[in-house]
Length: 219
Image (tube, rainbow, N blue to C red):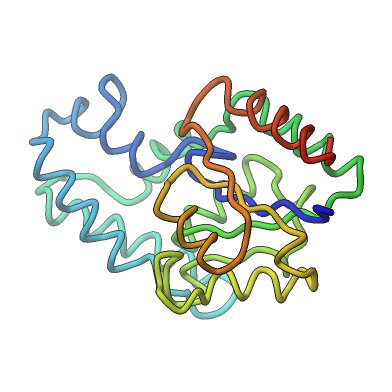
């Protein structure tokens, strides 16, 4: 019997900040500032590697990380922009996928335990959580991020998956994990955690996921 659903964030609950902020054809940095796409992709990957496993010090440490991130990005792309300008630009790209908030409400109403397991920087998650109201659905202790664990979901030792099921206190055989990247689903299955591949950023994703969860007897 499935007792808990574990969610990725970017591409599942919310639009991926990195992909849309940097690469969006109409509103992303590449288009706005006429930047070289290949160069922006390279810098974006470098910065993800540098910040994905870093946790800020203290309650407001994430804000210092965020400012450091944008300073590095503007320096490497030779942009004359203040971090505050890019933070403001980021905000427009933080929005839920169609129907996902309503799906979380349905799961919560049925007393299904909900958790997050996300490769994420501390600052982007803070902004996603605040703007989407994620703490309405997820207990703080049931949120597992790569920035807090120190490794990503691709780790061969399964640290993130182990952490999330331990925090839930539920047998992994009674949990299901939802992610939009097949590599992460493969890892979850190797760990012994059932996985559902989500159609990344799809406007029909919530409907699709709801039907699958219904077949599992959760909805």
